[in-house]
Length: 282
Length: 336
Image (cartoon, chains in turn yellow, blue):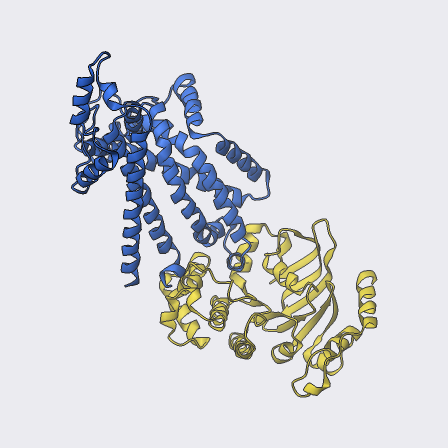
């Protein structure tokens, strides 16, 4: 059963051009779906639309976002907020800006458990401690009392991951969670997300431009170009034999650690022209 | 260690500031035309009388000599004797200070409440007509100076709809049981709320006149910072967690957005205390500012010096307080 089903979602900048064109995708319970595309393809917009945090300048012009059987777009704002807050979570892109600089780590994890989900303070604190241990933070009790500026980027991303899993959400949107990190830290964070996802059985919508990441973490993926899904397949099929010419070109453009001398193949102009024509007229 | 050093440095700069203020005021009020002795004697006094009185007040000595004598007294807590009121300056000034402090703090509180409410409402309803309305109201509040607001308030709430008092600090016929000069505070402590009400009904209009322009400044800056903060990632994250927009503004954005406003409030509060001079005059409020104007009119040199020094002490004290509060609110400063 699909936990999240985006149906024919279209969005545009108010008074401007389209950002999302008729996007459909599903995330099953416990599935990890990659959402790939180049910068500006609209991949982050989909995650933001689901979570209800689209910029004010963006308006949804059609379609449905069905979460757990309810179309979010038909809900009143307050009900939508509560529903999303209780069943979804976000792992943000930049751990350096995603924690409130004037509040201690502990309350940043526990507050929403108490305020929104009605947990007791004690239960929330125990949970925060357990989670920080789970994301392999040493001396978690001390970290809970610290402020964000006292911690490294990798530590902060671990904390944000812990916080995302805190309320056992059904779906987590990971918005390029490793992009802002050091290459050495990226791999650990990726492993961590994969491990927590497997242990908690959380569905994951993994937004990234990095196909290498997709191959390690995801089961299925949707390829986005200029706001349109051009390919939707399993990871195995995609890396074996991509159906769409743009996907094939994208794959060829990805550096390979096994064969660094192969060099990079830029996406050919002809492929770009073809996919652009397809997206805009098809 | 670092804290001790900072405090020490702070005390030294404060002392230098106060010395500078003392020197400037002392020399300036002696150089400008106008002679206290001439004001004290009846017309037709002989040159001999003038010379005698001038000698009594030490005004025959050179200005640097006078300054040394005065400064020596100040260091021992003696600010001299008022020429017109014939009482020790320190007692006079300290007696009036509470009235001015109560008025200023009340005005500051009102400014923070009004400005804060305007900023929060404007942020919550940003990019709507309400925000536009708040912006216009703030523009008007800011472009009219406090003493003009005083006149407007007197006209509206004192004359057209006389609901508030427009003169004095307290109704003169009342029996006052107070032992301190902090009437408002003491009336609350003594649970004499009838007196509190009477005091407030006198203080409300002058305080409001002082508060309106400051409220507009606070409202504008705070709204600006809040709106910038609302775009930051941690605010967005809080939105995904199910917090309402109002709650996001209050508990996520406000604690960070308030810092620049706090600095501004400190600076503006000192201007507000300066503003009490005219406002107190306008409302015949018996505070330090009113006394300052009388002192200047009468060329009461020791009293002017005492009042200016006291104002300088308040200014530096407020600045120190702002710095300390800033450090308390901003963890990044506390932990270095």
